[in-house]
Image (cartoon, rainbow, N blue to C red; front, side):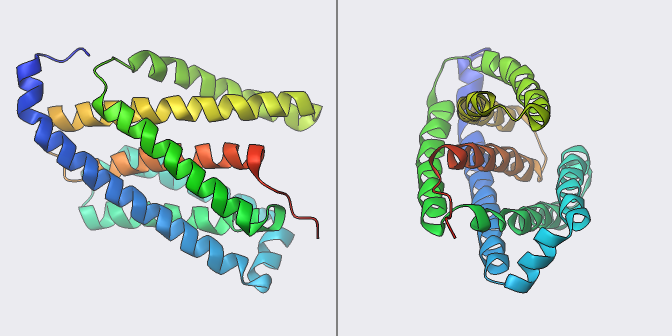
Length: 230
């Protein structure tokens, strides 16, 4: 890895590890928020009917999620920690609202199973990213363009409706976010080691890891989830 020196990295290793654990805790709280909200909405038929029956509202929530992500990524370092945390949890809660519709498509058992599989895979990949000495920056560079390609191909496939392309994109998505999980963990640990200050850096790190987790979960759910038959 292209550190200034191994000695300099060693001095800041404890600080980086501590900050990374803080980011993991924020991420875990965000995932818990998403799960609780998703379950709550899924068990409220009236709210689900409003979500499913009102496309304007549903897409408005999706755009609200995107807006919060971009806003938090852009201004988090200039905000107080309570405000940045509130934005993070607002995003996690909005994600839970939209994720509640997954219970209309997949069985609760398969959603739970996929979540735990994702958690295991994420944990292993993130641990690898945290401890490896191999420079994973090439994954980050490739991942950016791969993500753009998947997004564009997914938009095209909305019109083509190609089953083959859909399966290819699903497998590609799983591999992409598996690689990004390891890369982002390494990048964040390096950032925490080099940063002299920034109380909200762990929250930004948590947002990055949270996004890796939920995207990997969604792609795995498309592969392994059991669809409801009722």
